Length: 220
Image (cartoon, rainbow, N blue to C red; front, side):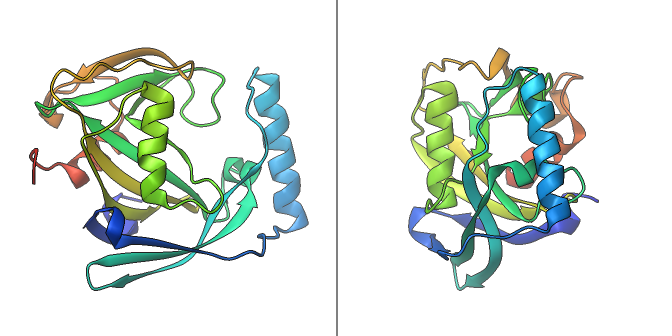
């Protein structure tokens, strides 16, 4: 499935244009899905991961109201996002991060991580926390993973991945001369060229598609 064919909504949206409405009732998976999550968590621990199986967000529905995006969310078991063929609409956010001159921040993810272990990915990302707005997740993940604050951040698209993982894609721009510090989830990092066609070979096709989806000039 292409990124384009799974787009649910297109931005851009600033913080005032994204509304998260939370239900209090937790999502209840089928016994088969719960068992699959148990097995996935067990495999993750065997790889040495310190990840905890807590509570995250699930996308129940969404709507576009004028220039606003409204997402209806509910709490869900974090481990359900690890079920390969059915993540139960678990909700994550990806913050594609740009230097002031347009270069893309990329990091090679540690081998113990639940997603994309040992592979290069763009920016920062992770699960939307309970009762959090996905646009707030963007800046939070950027702070946690790279110890840096953006000068501008907005949501770009709401996407459903083939494994039924909902993804809020955002883009952040850093100040001139901003210094990033990688956290323990990355064992190497680099600035990739502003021109996506000039990226190195380790750039995965999906990340190229995401970058082309959101690629805009600074200040636009």
